Length: 267
Image (cartoon, rainbow, N blue to C red):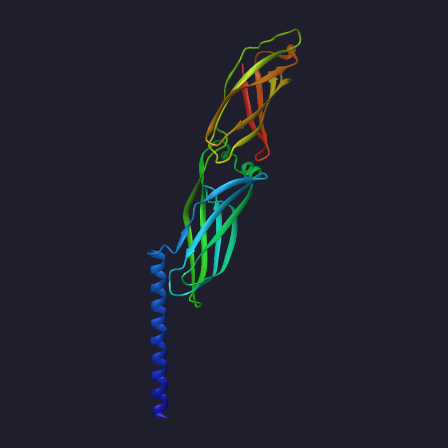
């Protein structure tokens, strides 16, 4: 009986030694992979516009240089505004990354651009940044579970209508008994990574809140380029022109939708 108990004790001790040796080598191998081999790293974040939808592509590269397989690798990408409010999230799963192999988990966040800008109007006119959070969970060596929360990443956002302003009004010209024309000068910079193609529409009112004319101009501004031009307003009710009032400005495009830029007074 004593010999059986002693043998059982030795078996338990040996099992514990093997277990701790396995855990030690597994943890050491994983740490070496992450710290020295850059086993898990974020790729270059890119974006594109497709059918009025903003698609953000965030690749995560898993290069398993360790001695054991990685399984059930789950990546959740969380996009927040500068105040921390969640805008969208997306999850990707890689079933297995074998020892000595590499795979890429690609998260594609899809956002309706017009809807996004309608909720966060500052995105039109001000450069800012999004906060990107990565939630990782995976199993290592088929038995060790890990969870990692990385929330200190950022992604810059360039405003498509940065610095939008009216820089001046011309005097009325081509004046007849019933009509005239006025040029309204506008400027802005496209800091976005995508091109801006659409239509500027200006509605002109006098100081009695009466509509007196409309001007429309097609606009095409490439990424990181500026716009400075005039929209010609046709005033078809010359008797309504009083020399003061206000204009309403709209911009319409397939990607941004219809945007009410605002109201500007003139005199």
